[in-house]
Length: 316
Ligand SMILES: NC(=[NH2+])NCCC[C@H](N)C(=O)O
Ligand SMILES: [Mn+2]
Ligand SMILES: [Mn+2]
Image (tube, rainbow, N blue to C red; front, side):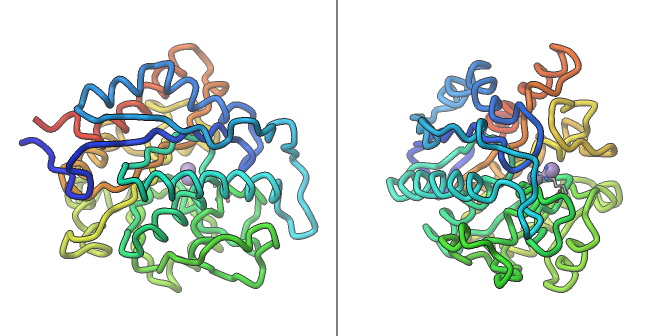
């Protein structure tokens, strides 16, 4: 069965690099795109029949030199550079989507999700979101304990607790409705985030659900919640830490008890099979955190495989 990409029948995609680490405190996430591209990611996608070009919206920035581990009065870190980075990515993705190409954004830490979500939901307000992650990334400036903005990208685009937003985030359109996002893979959700998920009734499938029902069923349950008639385009934001650290060790916020590599790739295959994919993020690869060369290769390899599966590789 060949995959029919309903929103991209002519198979044109753009790889958008987001070498950024300002949403969290560890060096190295900014190297994710380089390692993924050096592993041959662009030609791997081309071999699947996609015409691929590239954009580098962060070229010329020096965010790494500006990153600090200090919290501002509100308890947030690096608000200025995260907002600026997200705004660049937002503009780049909007252009890409408007030109009819499928944006594949390679991070970088997950704070860039604010830019991709904002762009894709403005491009098509029907867009629904699958957030594949060990974490919910839905803290607000008032609930975050760490102050790391990679734990907050979803809330900004949802406009949760918007009185608390720093002025730098004013540009972000509040375009995501709580019934348009579903999570898969959760296992480390902060107390404040749990309250938000409950309050807004946001569909969230944890590792417990995956053990209970199996990944195939959970994927369908997630789409049933946000896209019951399988008619809307889907933005998939894939944090590699959703997959168990035994397979994906080189990432900044590892949590035991995650998806097997096959379960992780199944999710990407299933979105391909649905034909609904309209954009993809692959984030949180940190090549400096592998304890061995093999750890780095495994992680970069998994990131590439997620991309290939989502772009149609494993379906015959
Ligand atoms: N994209 C990620 N890896 N996010 C991890 C977030 C961890 C924690 N919930 C926080 O807000 O700090
Ligand atoms: Mn995560
Ligand atoms: Mn994340």
